[in-house]
Length: 128
Image (cartoon, rainbow, N blue to C red; front, side):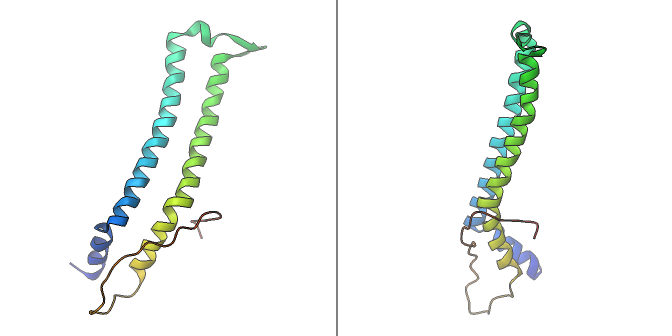
C-alpha cells in the first residue's frame, strides 16, 4: 500500500467523513424521492382521474396541463435546494478533508488526525 492509499483509507475510516457521506446520501435520496414522487402523483392522476385532469382552469389551460408544467417548477426547486444544501453543508466539510489530504505527511511522532474545516455558509463557489 502506498502513501496515497494509506491517506485515502485513513480519511474514509474517519467517523466525520462517514457522517459527511451519510448526510450526502440522505439528501440525495430525499431530493430524488421528492422529484420522482411529484412525477408519480402526476402520472397517477392522469391515469386514474382523467375527468379531474381535463378540468378547465382558464381558457384552454386544464388542470392536467398546469400540473404537467408544474413538474418543471418542482424539478427546478429540487435542483436549487440540492445545490444550496451541497454548497452550504457538504462542500465546506469536503474541502476540509481535501485540504488535509493534500497536506504534507505528518512527522512520525505526530498523530495523523483528520479535522473537518469549520462550517461557513453563503457565497460558496465550488468551481473556483
